[in-house]
Length: 180
Image (cartoon, rainbow, N blue to C red; front, top):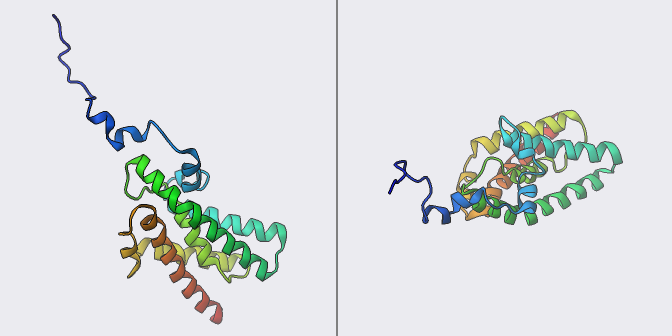
């Protein structure tokens, strides 16, 4: 009897591990939401792509509909609520399916944080850039206690650290608006 001398790359136990089945099945709605319709697959820096997509959606709404400041605020609040309600479970599902603790391509958290940073901002390029830069700064550096939020379980930790970064950016942007 002739046997194959090369070792098998799969074993019965490895086929059942989460990492090996991650590529086999994807929950489409969760991946669509978590990657913010594919923005999370942008390279380099998928988080920045997610933030830019959030700013562009805010700008498109403001440019197309010319809302009052109150209507723009309500649009953002509704968007934030939606990203949190859908983003936390979607992030949990995608993290489980990908086998990664906090996948970089999950950017719905950046969208929520960026929209928080844009709260109360008038619609113009200067304020959009200030909110974008401040949010990315706080998201990347994660000052105290934001980094501790990453320790929350699954989607909660993925999303809420960016909510914290968005709140920091909102605070600084609001102070800057007083002076500029």
